[in-house]
Image (cartoon, rainbow, N blue to C red):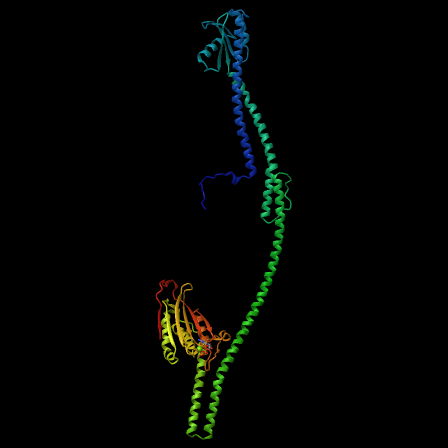
Length: 516
Ligand SMILES: Nc1ncnc2c1ncn2[C@@H]1O[C@H](COP(=O)(O)OP(=O)(O)OP(=O)(O)O)[C@@H](O)[C@H]1O
Ligand SMILES: [Mg+2]
């Protein structure tokens, strides 16, 4: 969002310091002063102009009536009679002089006094430079000449000297009017606005006024009523909210209490589960080992009896040898169980390195080469261009060894194909290893149990292969899934994380395929 900043200059500084009432009062006063001043100036100008026009008209009318009197011969035209007449007219306010001039401009008579002559001369010579205006009317018949009246416009200005007192009175009345207007505006608008603002502030603070003391019927009154309604609604919502909050707090406490109970029950369950699985494991181990041990004990007793009877012929020796072979096998089986159990139990952390999964697979297949040949299994490899994975070489070899042996052991029918397929899954940044066989498959009932320790369907099997596999992969943060169709075969998919996801090349080369 763009912003306009005027440095060192505030567009409307008043708004920061004064309230609305002050602003309105100031504006009213200012407009009254401006209005009064403009009106005063206009009135004065118009008044002066009208007075001047009036004075001129009066002077002209005096000159015309004197000229008419001379023309009609109503007065004698000798200077003495004229002088008397002019003296009379000269007394009129604003008339500086009145003179009758002859045909050649000579003064026949002038009034009201001798100084008038000088004024006439000045007025005529200056032609407008003095405040005295010379108004002339010709005399057409009888005595030829003209009547001149000098009107002193200065008397107008002098008369206006009284004006300031009038102006002050007007200003005083205006201020009184302004104050009355301000009081009316304050009572009718500003005070209600204050009240409304205060009420809104209270509502904002969560105090909800029930009544807003504005009784006017105008817009502000309507606003006050709406605000009252809004305040009442908000108060009721607020109450509801508070009661809901209280309820929520109570349920939260209840929930916390229940959670605590569940947590206790859970930890108890985990403890008993642990004991149960430990017991199960111990029972399974005891069962697995007690059978061969019982067999060994039986054979040991038989051998002891033979030795004690002292009958040790050729045939006896052969029987004892067979007993010993069986005992050896059973002991080996016990050792095998214990070793697998140790593999499973010992939680050796994998030594994660960047490893080539194809090398791990090939090393494993090299170990199993003889078994594959003996079992008459056709091997199909489809290696795609995959990045290095994060893994422990030895542990992953153990994983593939267990899975591939299971696959070989499952193939007893005609078709015996073992397919190993690797591919890179870009989205999850993992490498998938699919090991598929065409063996007997796993029944729906058993597929959920294959990772259980000691679960086996094989004679002589320990049922520890897949649990070991699972344990190793879990430590690699890798996944394993098994899909199987009874009678058709099983596919084991192992998903390993790539060693360095950012360095993984984006080019995909053609896969290499081989069949052996
Ligand atoms: N590829 C497979 N095809 C069919 N069944 C399988 C396959 N892999 C595992 N199973 C089933 O899962 C069971 C458990 O396998 P696991 O490797 O854990 O033990 P095991 O092979 O029976 O014994 P051990 O691995 O000690 O020789 C097997 O007995 C078998 O029933
Ligand atoms: Mg196995």
